[in-house]
Image (cartoon, rainbow, N blue to C red):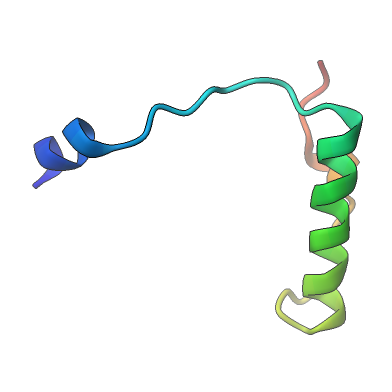
Length: 51
């Protein structure tokens, strides 16, 4: 089963998040918190690895 997953998975490009991506992720995190989907607010910039 694991072999099949590796054969059919998408190749993802791993790259640093730019400012626009961080802003988008922050809006999503804020929406999740506002709708009580996560228990506390998240500051995305605090959890992103520095470039």
